[in-house]
Image (cartoon, rainbow, N blue to C red; front, side, top):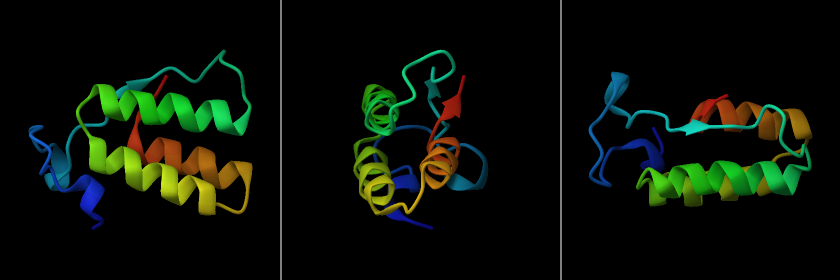
Length: 80
C-alpha cells in the first residue's frame, strides 16, 4: 500500500501492517472541507504519523468531491 501506512514512523503496526488509526472528532465540528482536512491532518501528526498526514493532505486536495474527502478521512483516522 502507500508509504503513509507502512508503520515506518515508530508506531506499532495494527492489522494488515498499518499503524492504528488515531481518533479524530469530526461529528459536531465545522463541516467546511478545509477544516475537516486540517482536523484529520492534526490527528495524524499528533499520533506521530507524519507520512500519513502528508499523504492524506495530498490525496484530499486531489479529491473530486466532498464525499471523496470524507471517505479518505475514514481511511486514515477513526472518525468520531
